[in-house]
Image 1 (cartoon, rainbow, N blue to C red):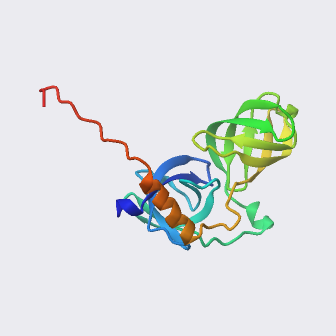
Image 2 (image 1 turned 90 degrees about the vertical axis):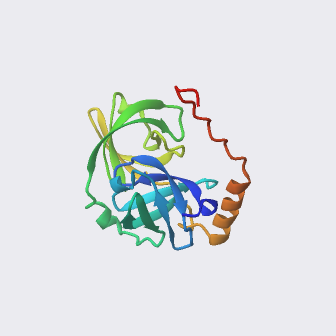
Image 3 (image 1 turned 45 degrees about the horizontal axis):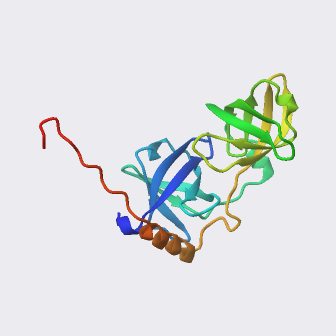
Length: 198
């Protein structure tokens, strides 16, 4: 991996909303590779927040290597009927949910999730409007959602992930971002101090 051709990325597993930091490299308009000690936790569909981009890039994991995964930006779209058959995964994610058009904000838990939706659990979810934004830890972008059902202390929400409209970055944009990253001052490595004085 050529360090000069790498860019920082936040990886979001769309199946369970888990996030981790990775390094993206070999970027093209068709895909890239990511490196992290957590790639073996990924399911099939991911969103990448590449450094310098304001939205996620949709991708599919197509290969795994030693702490690496190959991501394709060429994604097949599902019909609405297929989305309903997605497997829900049990999760336990603390989230902040707020109304898009009114100031209601509350803390809740996401107790199951899939690519297209999640189930929220918390007190007074009935106070939330239908159109909400969900903030999950480690992801600095809100996920737009619409509450589609409510019962007792739970609510089901359909998610609209903040993907790039073009669904893939242009190679020129990626190269420009890489140049910007290279131009930033690098952090100096911390000096290691030994207990033996060296």
